[in-house]
Length: 99
Image (cartoon, rainbow, N blue to C red; front, side, top):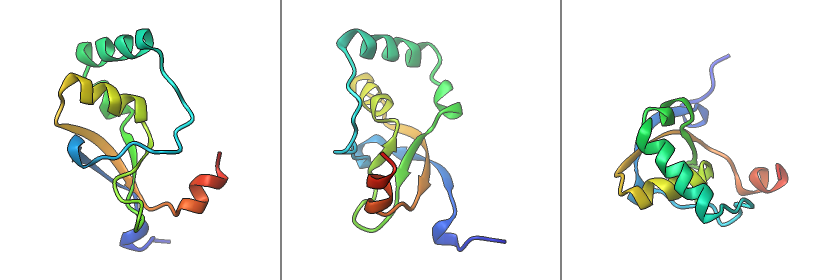
């Protein structure tokens, strides 16, 4: 059964400037771990294609990163302009109930 266009997952590259970190992200990262993540991304930037960010397109939650907030932070600090992402439409209550 095909899903309507608005419900299908869409994989694309998104401008870092358009992305918003989730205010509900429970994960913290130490300076050392962030530095390690940045080195890893610099060494193999194509690894992000295997683990793209998950970004919301639900009205009122557009461009909020659901998964990959630390990768977004590392990319911002590295000065990158775009990141691979899978865009999904997830209402706020579904995200809140999944934690």
